[in-house]
Image (cartoon, rainbow, N blue to C red; front, side, top):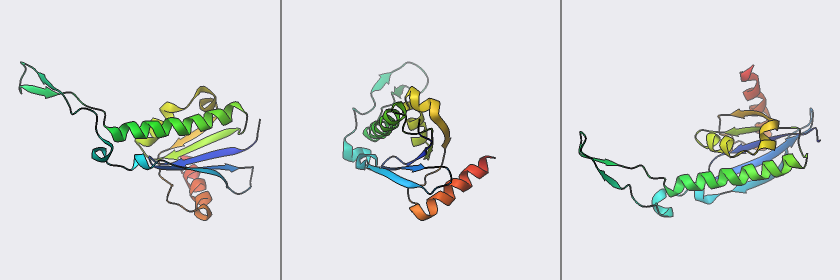
Length: 149
């Protein structure tokens, strides 16, 4: 098994994957773009609008919630990223992985992670670092980890 620690820095429309060996620097492994994660639901085409339920209760009519197209795109991107991590975990490419993503996308990612990745998950951090450049990123990750202790 590799001794590398991987870090996935993501939001609903982009992600970057890094590896770090012991005290070495972060090294970029790849980047992922999902433009659909940024589109507004009206651009993507919603599912059927909420259906009205006739009810005899107080208030007359109620509306069923709908899952909009943007939410589906976020889930699709989370699964795509989780599949990359799962394949690498099964190949022994890393010893641990940390995920940095803001809610609610972090929840989608955690839910999508496969069993091999879950075993190697060293932490899931509710912060969006996708806008941070590589030079600053290592310090921001170190700071985030120090905040936990």
